[in-house]
Amino acid sequence: MTVEETVETLEARAAAALPALLARAYARYSNFTVAAAVIDEAGEVHLGVNVENAAYPSGTCAEQTAIGAMVTAGARRISKVLIAAGSNAVVQPCGACRQRIAEFATEGCEIVSVQDGAPTKRVAFWDLLPESFGPRDLAR
Ligand code: THU
Image (cartoon, rainbow, N blue to C red):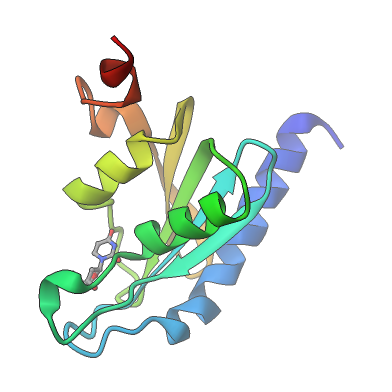
């Protein structure tokens, strides 16, 4: 298997895991379930779902949950974020999640939309958040 095939298989496997994960989302207020998989630079997959709260702004997005899982596992670089919605529509990360992804995104980081458990749309992450503020700004 080539490196490209291995990466594709990993992405396909992560995508296939998302529909079942949607059932674990805690979306009792919006009923809009979201599941995300973050793939780190080492090829490990970290999963997350949205976790809403009766105090609405305290809810968290699926991407945020998955990033927390990645950091907790000791990884620090995001190669891909896969996103699936219970509505089965293509969903891109919200503004706040773009900032959270930016903190850890590799140069070639991709956002991959998942529908029916398969990747359908691919966007270069930095096209979604150009000219952003990040760790480098604090290092100056
Ligand atoms: N949501 C996510 O989890 N990720 C997204 O990319 C978009 C929105 C969640 C937040 C909230 O729980 C619900 O979807 C409706 O906005």
